[in-house]
Picture 1 (cartoon, one colour):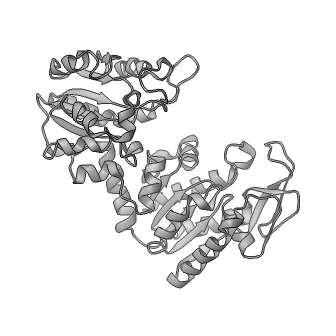
Picture 2 (cartoon, rainbow, N blue to C red):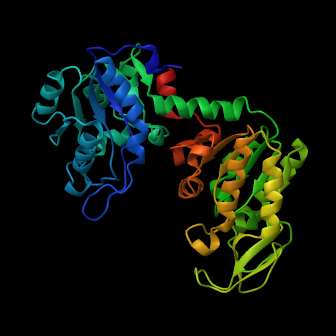
Picture 3 (cartoon, one colour):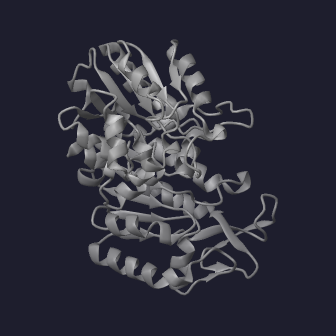
Length: 399
């Protein structure tokens, strides 16, 4: 593991890639600085060593190429100053235009912090352009990647730059934490190992399900995606979401699980609604007997009790994806219940990894994030890692 803890960065100019793609309101005020907070340990370690930092980050999805004021990192720069309690030099000039960025980087002293403008203002960034990566690399002496949320992108600043630092490329503390926990989850998990996989579509989780078949003891399939399985097995699902073209895939996955000795659990009862509305009429029915005109919106109470029993017997848990229409409070109970079960299991020594927007949102809203063993910061990156794919941002550091 190429960790910054194994190196002293005194008097080094460090190129630090972070994920500061934070949400802002209409007045460009940051509404949630979690992603910035997560990289603070890395930033503080580097500064305490006596490094000068050149921070690179993206913000939104620029499409034009060049400066777009609505996607500027200026609000992030101001907030970073408040978090660090020191001046942050922010360069809205673009690299290579007039030499100002290069000059500012060369004049940095120990303890200085320079934040570059939105790295995606350069069209070369998302193309993984090697010449652009070289220009960035020329600004510093070392490269540290702490942007796990962008580790699945083979962009210039997230992967290609590392080639120019064969001896001085490192994981930041956040990236190191993510990699170590995901490696533990996939390669050395205590058993019984239970995966709880949810969400609306089977198609988005096929890779995860297939990769986990050889690793888990039990598989719990929740959310709308379970109805593709239910219909494939001959059940009546009413208006519940279903990918008809994935039913054969679902049956093949069930067959593969059976062959591998993996016990698959599909919820037996469901909360169904007569409309996709928080105030719709609801009832509890068997999951394979949803009335016409009704659709599943959450796990039922019997299913929640079954899931609790499975969770409490587990030594390792991976949870990715909600149990129902989590965005609507009336239909969020199943997801909240699962969060509480997993937190309770952790008290008994279970290793639990939480990933995916709604799953992470659930544990945070309930104040349970710090009760979990590991809550991933990267949605797409974690999904691809769980599918068994090599992430460019990680592979680039490891060499």
